[in-house]
Length: 419
Ligand code: EPZ
Image (tube, rainbow, N blue to C red; front, side, top):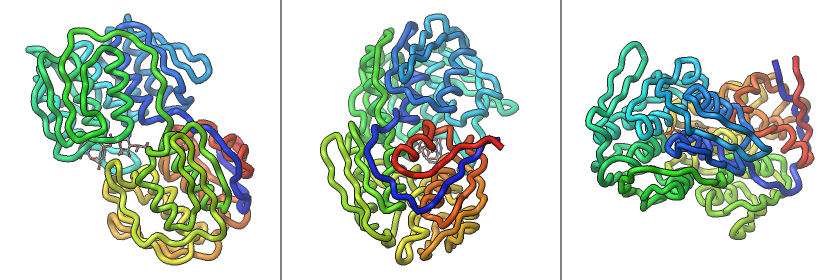
């Protein structure tokens, strides 16, 4: 089993380019099924979740090749439409293959994603939207059997909640549907903009991406393209929070600053000095971070739920008491139990956490509970006195490319060891 050894007390200083976005490359890989040829994805991060998506594509008959950060994916012979249980359960977000398979094959059979580390992962909004496009859905023994007896047809769809995954699945199915689809209350996340850009480059006709109403005019066929995956805004938020935690200074290069507009006010309330350029973010933290009166997670452009765990970790050693309200996932406070073992003082009531900043955290053996919770434990380890041993780091490898190399390159002491 692999684990991280984190020595506290070393500030992060330096500059870096941010990895490609996990939450963009995954839907892009599913969308490649609609190309029916070889797509080239540049800046594709090397993550276990990406490998999970490539394994699904391979199972469906696609071939892929990696050249450094560039992925070549040939879906010309990808005629499968069934995804087995084990491949689905390796990664909850594989549900995004549903819309792509419907767009490509007109049918799909996969297992329900079930719950995950963050709580239940329902897909009711996905299925309601797809039904509006003419998809017949059968559920039996945890398997989902979807067909489009009369083919996919454009329709008006309104999401009860701006679900990222549901927006992606409906977009993927609508591209080659007959007629126009109008999707209201759509997710506005930048990853939706990246997906729509990729699909439009393939010949789709999507307008309104990044706003709450998307219009898709169905086309007959899409064609392969080359595309550069956008930078990972959650990884970027993680490096900024860790720099704040360790009282360092960092420059994010070639990073569109607007992607984190919901995060900067929180960093400034914590006492960070920020300078934003169009494609660069500078942050410096002098002295102990200050508390945040109220941090609420919201759909984009609000504060992203995926950055909440790491910011909670920083606030456990901030000056004062912070209130965190998690509005997106019911089980996003899982790392709190492990942070308490390091001396944190956090009270959780449902979706609210009260964080009393302590003067000093202490290194301890802790266990990563999920991807962002694992990053939170590393963040706490950067602040703690002594050594923190983070176990179950496979969670972290799902979303951060060689985390230890990135942090060591910035002056931290983080070692990956095999026990
Ligand atoms: C995507 O998950 C991201 N994953 C998540 O990142 C991210 O936290 C989330 O969007 C919110 O931004 C990927 O892109 C691969 P949702 P997704 O559908 O699509 C409820 C990470 O750490 N809901 O916007 O699953 C749902 O239960 C991951 O990188 C329904 O009720 O998120 C949740 O409470 C974690 N019914 C809320 O909506 C549905 O049909 C947001 O879910 C769908 C969702």
